[in-house]
Amino acid sequence: MALTAEERERFRKLCASLRRDMVDVTGWSGGAHIGGSLSMVEILVLLYWKYMKIDPANPEWEDRDRFVLSKGHGGLGHAVVLGRRGFFPFDELKAFNKTGSNLGMHLDSKKAVGCEVSTGSMGHGLSEALGMALGARVLKKSFRVFCVVGDGESNEGSIWEAAMAAAHFKVSNLVALLDRNHFMIDGNTEDVMSLNPVADKWRAFNWQVWEVDGHNLDALSDAIEAAIAWDKGPAIIICDTVKGKGVDFMENKAAWHYGGLSADLVAKAKASIGEE
Amino acid sequence: MAGVESTLTWTCYDATKLSAREIYGIVLSDLGAIRQDIVGLTADLAKSTQIGAFGDKFPDRFFNFGIAEQNMFGAAAGMAKVGLLPFVSTFSVFASMRACEFLRTDICYQNLNVKVIASHGGTSFGSAGTTHHALEDISIVRAFANLTVIVPADGYETAAAVKKCVEINGPVYIRIGRGFEPPIYKAEPEDFTIGKAVEMRPGTDITVIACGPTVYHAVEAAEILERDDHLSVRVLNLHTIKPIDEEAILKAVMDTRRILTVEDHNIVGGMGSAVADVIAASGKGCVFEKLGIPDVFTPHGYPEDLQHLFGIDADGIVNKVRAMMGREFEADESWEDEI
Image 1 (spheres, chains in turn yellow, purple):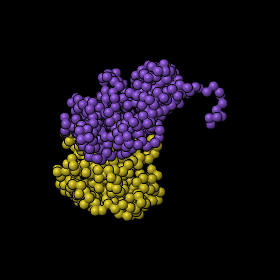
Image 2: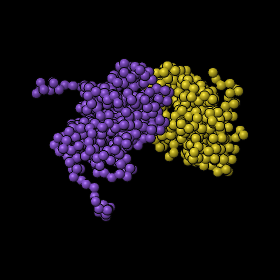
Image 3: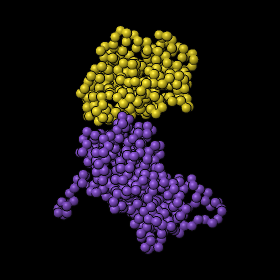
Image 4: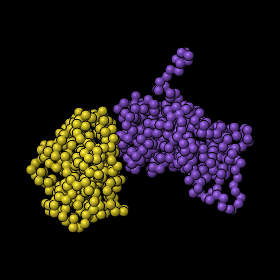
């Protein structure tokens, strides 16, 4: 079912609010993976606030849908979402990256409540998501597994091992979302290691593919619904996104893959996001 | 010669008779009937690792990931995350190196209940050569926190280890051979305890600490040394490399003052190094030597020839023990000549 006008407006404001939170945490923590966190905000909002069957009060609920952040360096964005969704007090984010904190740049599933899998090394999460999806089949459970994959991460051969196996096993309770933000640490993905034609690659691996603007809530919502409904095998939504989305001086700048923000820049970034 | 050749006709599936691998396949199938949460995973080695026996019995709980070990170990982590008990089978060389980081980061870091059956350990895949010899796996995986590391002596002990490992709620790495190793036990050892070394023979002059196929050779060597040299040689089967049985090692140091470790593994970082850590930390002095692959890449050849070449068979152990018996503690207090 398409987004209602109320949902569209609420999620739009929520996205802006989460982006401002991510900027704050980057300021508090001294440095964080801000660029790739800002690019996946709409994806996470729709999953965590609309499509995933989850219960923040009961994070171990065994029939819950699972989320795996395969691009584990998006821990900042993921942690902000988990905090605001009620898995832990948002104040915990004030200690992000600090010694003794439950939260750091790559989330630890043993410490960050709501984080299903400890990721951070590239090319691991999709395999673990596949294992969870196959596990649901063995256990005769109906939960789904959602997995956000990075485009830089897609250089890893293990991503394609997982892609091949998910199609082979006809896993239809697995939905991957590619955060196609076009940048990795050393620059544009097509300059560092070409990924295009990325949609054709996934099609060739026998996945059902949707290509959408990853910041357009309506288009993204429609694609997620179609991917959930797809029951013949694995599904992937290629989300065309902007690295650093919402902060004018960060957008499409590889350098903002990771960085710290002074109080002055925090204010500028939040002003750029707006919607205060 | 045609007749000779025809009697040598065999396929890669046949080389498993009564081996640790075959026993593993049977035991896992039996366990699978009791534990509905067990799933079997392999990477195009269902037949070679004998996990296929489990797959025949429980096709819905068996997954062949093709030749993609990284993905298989990651998927095993995911399966454990949702409450299953995955047994992952592949060759030791791939479990420890091709899938190394997936074993370490996905399985051990998250302390997941995944059992790794790493076959073809050491030089047991002889003629396959260096690419298929696992000379480093013990060294690599024993550095992974949360992981229990077991090297059973033969098929019977493998059966015991596979049964016992499910009692641990965490990752376990069991390193077995290819299956041609002679058995040292006559039946499955009922008192097998993870973390507890087995005294295969009592002795007071020297202790030979072995694991895996070298246990058989150490016992044979001890018999020769008793008969020909009138030496009383203790043999410890240190089947669990981690957590290591410090008590048995230090008791051996105290009782015999001479320790020889023997393993089908590089002498760097393997079982011998683990034993050396225990002895060094204890502050107790003893004559100590390690037998193993002397930090070289092994050539191809029959396993028994390779074991002879590197002195980890009975002959090699006998010779090394004789040499060690001639070594004495230095009486002098001067270390000038040593540093």
